[in-house]
Length: 186
Image (cartoon, rainbow, N blue to C red; front, side, top):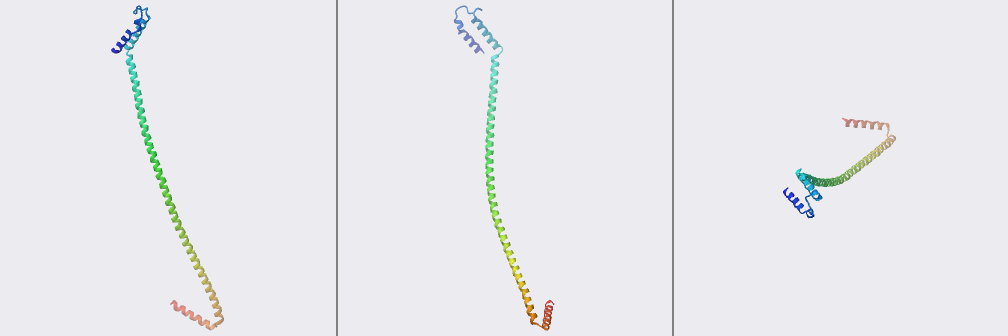
């Protein structure tokens, strides 16, 4: 404060008003009145501690700006941390999606291979069933032909026997057949 007051007095002494001619310390001199008003104004400012108040307000504003800058730096660091976290998560999701696609392709290939194997087994079973049906139909046809041949042979034998055999020979043949059946059953 002393330094400021000393600088003020030195400024007044070096003032161009002292270089003017005539009585400087008279109330008729406007320069003197202005100087006195200025000194009174500066004195009132110092009396009410306006420079201290202004300095405090400026310091308070500087502190506010500094805290806002610190908060902005913290927010920026937080944003960079979040960005890095999201980039990591995005990379992890991309890797997971790639793994899922790879696994799906592998499963699709396995399913296609299994379908081929199942189709081959099905075709083999159907061929075996068809061959079995053909064999069964063939056996049935052979049996039917044999049965028909037997029926025809019996009818032909009946006609031949009926034409060549007499009643006494027929009765003797019937008795012989009954005796064979009786011997085989007991």
